[in-house]
Amino acid sequence: MPIPIDPTIVANGPEWQIQSPTATPGQQSGGQNFGGALTQAISSLSNEQTQAADAAQQLAAGTASDPASVEMSVERAKLAMQLASQLRTKAIEAESDIFHTQV
Image 1 (cartoon, rainbow, N blue to C red):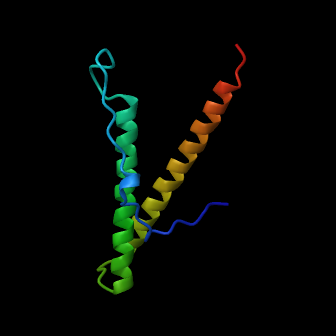
Image 2 (image 1 turned 45 degrees about the vertical axis):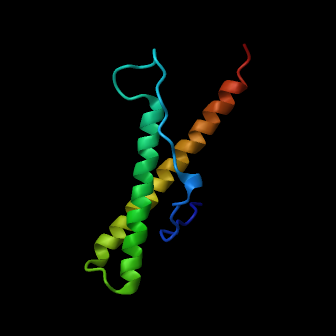
């Protein structure tokens, strides 16, 4: 059963800030590394949540011009959060499988 997402909750505190990982010399010199891609994805997720919260606040205040766009924004944020949750679950399962592998 999916957990309902409250678009009014926004994580803006300093404990939620993701620092960009720095590449050490000898690491991938060309292209983006995994840490950078993960940071970008989390930043995108945060932006989606913030936009949905702002749209929901505008709808509640009666200043939203198009309720359908608000619904789309909230649904997009909901799907992004569900995707992030599933990816986290799969990563934890993969980590567990790796640690339980006998050598």
